[in-house]
Length: 82
Image 1 (tube, helix red, strand yellow):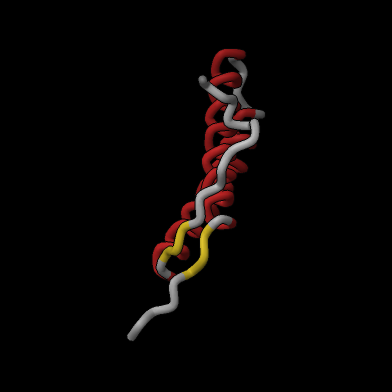
Image 2 (spheres, rainbow, N blue to C red):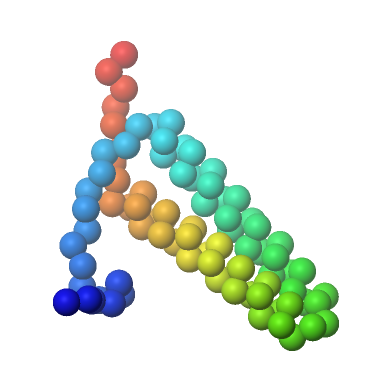
């Protein structure tokens, strides 16, 4: 049976490297920055369809950033064994 992703779910735990964590953090920052920029661009658009597409892009960028934040919350950073 299909369940909505917003319903109760089992959270997996991941152990990731410092390098991978930093990569994800940079990606989150870039997505959030791009979303803010794209949202500001939407204000200057005149065509309703263009505005709608631009705001969908913003929503997808923010959604992806949120998904990555959840991943990091459910992750611990592996200590290097050097």
